Image (cartoon, rainbow, N blue to C red; front, side, top):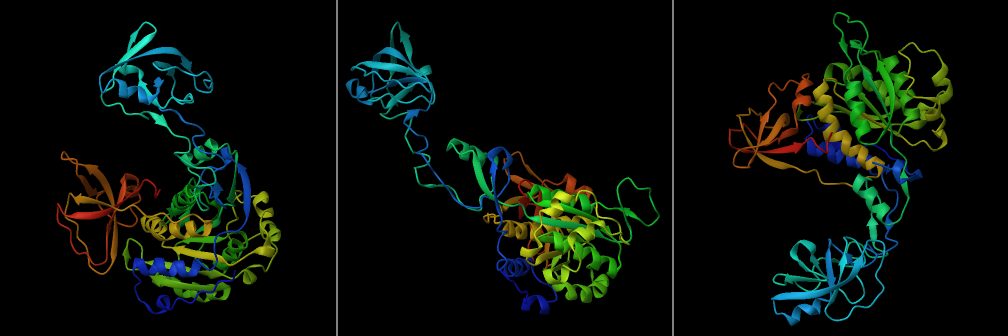
Length: 463
């Protein structure tokens, strides 16, 4: 499907709210839809992949009535004979899981049964073994609190045959893989992984391991952002770093857009840097520079890179030619190159993030993460926002959303409390390491006093 990018609000608004940004991203990405290619994988290879189609339950789960615990199975009508008193039954055998009992039982008889074993015909109730007293070949127990049908799992009480067990778009978590296995299914049809090409921009960047240079910094975004991409299950194409030169940036963007569904960059989009890249990006597609009313992070570049403008040189040639900029790392290998079909290439989505490390990570979590979920076909899941009592005063300017790195804990009364990790500068990457949550102060909020409730996003599930 062909998508165009004409967000009126983006072209006129000086400072978009975070809500407006998410709305504009959905308007851009929904016409593109999720990646269409599918593949069938064994369950052992399908962790964190996205189901391409719903899975119907081929059998009832469980497939038979069975015991929910180790104990003694009997006919629940026996309880009527004692009216809540002691019941004595004769044990006539043992039923193991996987070995169904086929003999009929007479009145006053029971069988010892193991967890998961099929309930014998005519028996519907299990008394736990720790509640009985053995008396030779008989058992005796107090029936108070035991009702007919107790401690029995019913056939199909989890899933009925023909029911949708997992919907299309389900991420295959360990629990989801276990569910598929419980249905007897060894394969899953999933969408192919989203291909995301990443590169950093900046003359000042050094690769880790390189000798220090005055005025230079080591490129942390390349590793933190690629780590976030891999946590989402994306196929990451590491395109290294590019200096602050329009020609070099254009070359690398053309390279990236021939290879990937999404091109993610960091740096080079702030107000003082955007002028020389704006015209170049408009030649390659339709790109907007947004200013977002948020902290940390403010600049954001979003748009589509037209495939026709990208395919100026065959992909194979782009891998072998000598380039004036740093070479593409060996992680983009020949097998990845050969898997890309130029004939079916649709526009690549460009997402340009700010260069400061924390700003880049926060912008990724707030905007890139939901965008990639949509493009990969993952079902939208609500973001879990909690409330906690602030342990400190938080200064906040109205009119923008602020994201603070925080530490979520419980006080002696069992209440959720949160404190910041300390200084909140957008270059302080150590604060992201120390944090277990993000404190979210919306644009209408002002200063927060100690003891007031604030919203928090737990890092677990985000990172």
